[in-house]
Amino acid sequence: ESAMTRRAHTPRATPGRVLDADTVLDEPAFRRVLALEVERSTRYGRPLALARVQVGAQGIEALTEQARRAVRRVDAVAQDAEGVWLVLPEVGATADVPVRRFLMAMGDGCAAGLARCPVDADTTTDLRAAALAAAAKAEPGTVSWADGTEDRVLVGGEVFLAADPLTRQVFRRVRELARSDLPVLITGETGTG
Image 1: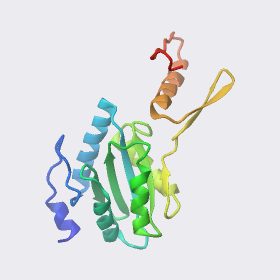
Image 2 (image 1 turned 180 degrees about the vertical axis):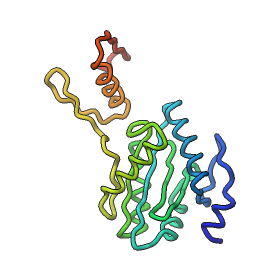
Image 3 (image 1 turned 90 degrees about the horizontal axis):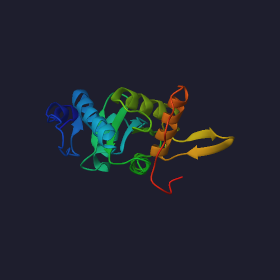
Image 4 (image 1 turned 60 degrees about the vertical axis):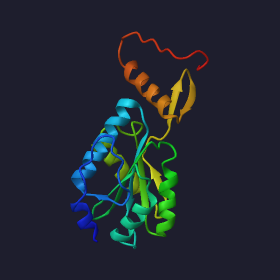
C-alpha cells in the first residue's frame, strides 16, 4: 500500500484522538492536527515541538517509513516533496532526542530543524516557519533548534542567561512592558528570586 493511498484514507483529526503511528497525514489533516496541538499548547501550557526533517539521498519514501517507525502513538507524521514533518506533543527541551535517533537510523544526508511552542512561536504558521528555518541551517546528520533557544538579558549591568522557556517568556514580557510608562509589579513564589 502506497503512502498516497494511506493518506487518502487518513481519518479526520479530532481533539483528544490518539493518532496511529502507521498513518502519514496529508496536508489538510496535518494542518488540523498541528492547529489542535498548538491551541492545546498555548491554552494549557503543554510542551509541543515541531520537527522538519530534510530529505537526504535516501528519498522521501524511505524517510517517511523511518519516521513512522520512530514516532510515538501520540506523534503525527506528514510529508511533502522535500521532507517530513513530525508533530511531537508533550516534549519540549528533550525533543531533539527522538529526532537525533531518527537521523542516526537514516544515515548521512538528512538534517532536521526543531521549533517549540510557545517558546519559539505560538501560531501554526510561525512554528512551521521556525522549524523550516532551523532545518535550513542544520548540517547533514544534525538537529538545529530554532533561533532563540536562549536569551541573554542585561539587568542592572549584569548579564543573565535565560534558557528555561518560562523564564524566557517572563523576560520577553518585561521587555515589552519596559517600553511603556505603566508601573509593573512582578510577583512569584517565595524563594524564586
